[in-house]
Length: 164
Image (cartoon, rainbow, N blue to C red; front, top):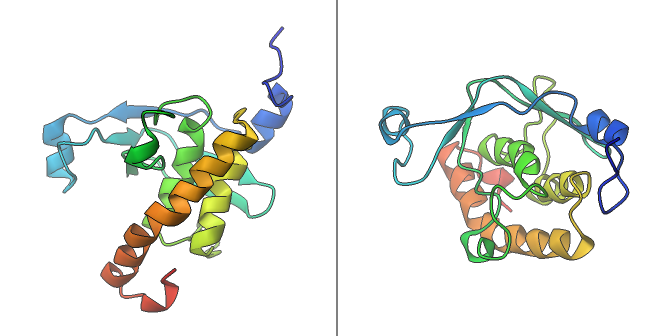
C-alpha cells in the first residue's frame, strides 16, 4: 500500500494531474552544445511527452524532444530546495515549457501570463507534496527572479506586449 503524501494527496489524485510517465535523459555537454545550449549547465531531454493537468489552466503539454535545465528553482534557493527535489522536479516541466513558449500551454494555443505560469509551478508543487512554506518561497523567488528572463524572451521572440 502506498501512503498519501504529507499534504494528503493520494495516488489517484496525483495520477489525475500527472497522467504520463516522466522520462528524461541527461545530455552530454557535447550534445547540449550541439543544440545551442550552455554545456556548463546540465541539460535534459524529454524522451516521451509529459503532461500536467492544472485545476485552473487545463492541460499543459511538454513535447518529447524538448530540453530543460530544471531551473525553475532560482540558484539562490538551491541550497535550500534542490532542482531534483521530489516536491519540484515534475512541477518544473510545465513551468519551464511555459517560460520557453511565453505561456503557450499546448496545441490549443491557450496563453498564460507571467504570473499564471508561476501559479502553475506552485499548484503542481502542491500535488507533489510541497508544504505551503515551500510553495510560497518558490513563488516569491520566481516572481522576482523570473521576470528578467521572461522579459528577455519577450524581446527575443518579438513579443514586447507579453512583458511582465
